[in-house]
Length: 475
Ligand code: 5AD
Ligand code: SF4
Image (cartoon, rainbow, N blue to C red):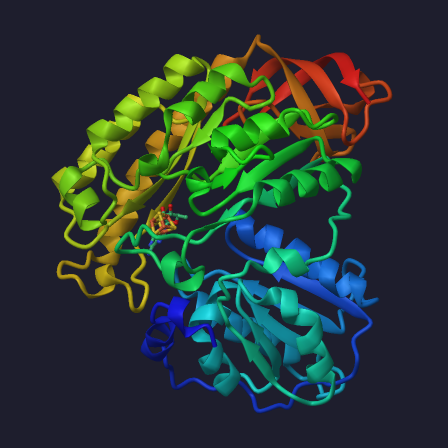
């Protein structure tokens, strides 16, 4: 059972034992013809969800049409904040409510809650056929064979050999695609569940990644976002056997014809190297955007979080990125209300926001995750204090995002068309700085999804910009 890498996930499960029971049902065992994968949480879950969909498609199961019930539902869960586990039981309740065993879908629970609480899910939700962890989902087809024979199967192994080798070729058609290059985390920030649910840091081999990128481009991808919990910790060897880091991988990917844009997320300040900073000034295809979580602007809190950087060292690092690429858009993550955080310490977080001027950011109230060190720390912060801090932080972040958007007005840039906009007659895409940009269809001539267009940015809103087409660069 891969126990060596399990890192006490079991203790997390035990800590969240609840009395509430789901209705007693046996799982549906009818071989499914259609599936739906519902992914929650981070972009890596979106990637994993796509790969599970590809595995099911190989078995001849097709995606259920929008609005129709699926025969098999995969709940691809996130455990990072809040009551994710409780949400699963209510989702399962909704899927099975008022239905007979034959009418309810077959249900698989995947993702990080499956990893942390697999046994508990099987005990509490009898309608669930399969529980599969993030490192084991390549075995979903075998698990499905067993499920149709009436077995209930759990696989939360974390094998050292990556699952990626056993996944089918990429076929997904979309102008933007995710590519997982690194998984897992060895940082053990004291609030975070990821090192327990995703396991130790591993890097996928260089040649596998280049091959997968080629497949994605053949299937229509023009932008690839490299994913990893600590993506900048990626390490490998190029074709000549030379040791390279993420910058080397990005440079090799930049040589792939047809691939126009490269992004990466999420980075850790301590894994940054000179080559990656320099790459932002050297590689045209590398977009001017960096997501670098800081979590807090106060050094005592950062230490208690086990972040191993200070506010000052973080700011110095960003300065170096700005030197390499002056127009780089900066993004970050924040947690308010970490145990023991005082008002003055929180104000240091507001200060760092004022210094950096993020183009966009993600901010969260601290959520105790069972089994993590911070969950049992003294000084847990009251909800109303956290609410107030989050609101004050978000006011500043929103102010800066709007200001960033306004400063782009008048600039001309490439936008990759991703989809139709919210309103009829609009196209929507992303600027190099990852801001959403829309433009009127009538303005774009023959432009279509997957085209790169040159737009003049004409008007800024808090969350997006309106552009006017100057040129359809490539179709
Ligand atoms: N509570 C609140 N936010 C958290 N994050 C991770 N763990 C927690 C937690 N226990 C946030 C961090 C991280 C992002 C992905 O989620 O900001 O960078
Ligand atoms: Fe969690 Fe910290 Fe690892 Fe990020 S670096 S995944 S916050 S433990």
